[in-house]
Length: 157
Image (cartoon, rainbow, N blue to C red; front, side, top):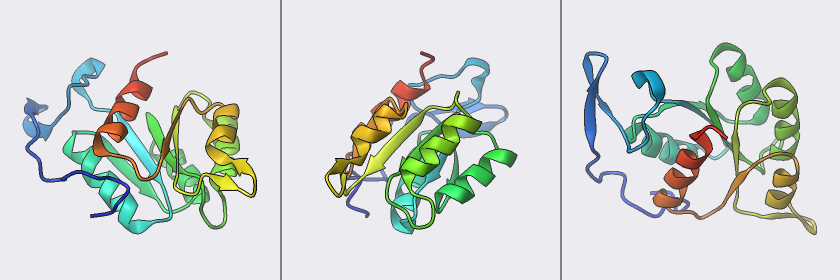
């Protein structure tokens, strides 16, 4: 298991029947019965997989991109209700991606994630908040911290 999420992925989850099939769900309920879609943008394959499995088990629709540019392209064809964004990636980093997301999709909430925290003497999670990100997660974080942040960001503000 990836150390950024310190909890079992195999814990039993409450389920409900929706749209003719058994789906995993959480306490969060969405109008119309459809679960929100979440785009994970992170260059770390194992963390992306761990986040995907955790969120999928909660019933969320999960999409993935390995870097900021691919995430932006993904949004062109598949809109998301929330973005989980790593701050340190090759090619297009998290701060640059936040800027582009804010211009193209200002309505989509973003949760910024970082294990490094600082670029030089600058705290990137603090800068992310200055760019309009309401919630951040410092790695390693727990499954509960992840799910609490996701639920909070999906509540209309």
